[in-house]
Length: 170
Image 1 (cartoon, rainbow, N blue to C red):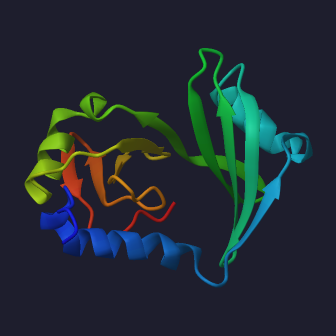
Image 2 (cartoon, rainbow, N blue to C red; image 1 turned 180 degrees about the vertical axis):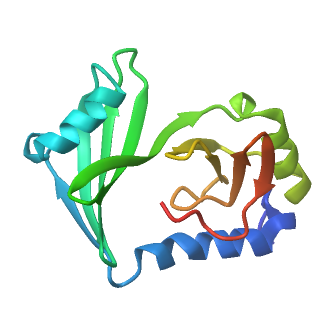
């Protein structure tokens, strides 16, 4: 018998969430790795304005439906890692999501409470804090042995935490 997952009580949510990102990528998505030196100057200008001193380490260009995105990963001067997701709109690049890894204990208490209510034995081994361009924050919680897709996502908007039933689109 396999050991019980810490997310077992939320297995329906977990299945919905793990299906979501694959569907979001879909067969119509194209992902192309891009060297930092080959990024358009406008993309570099946007991310370095958001994070002065950023050292770009990796990037990808994504075509999804009729949208173009760049995912740009880098290191901050203090050694922290950060990722920016940029969307091209009207010929300009805009950051639509900023991601960084944080400790589970660094998430707002209402977010932890909502996650524990959905999955009482929750013990995430990784937490990604994804700040959206509208100020909302999505906390992606990863279970042991499941590094590709979050087992649970919690939205933190307007001081309220809500467990998502579908994967966040960015």
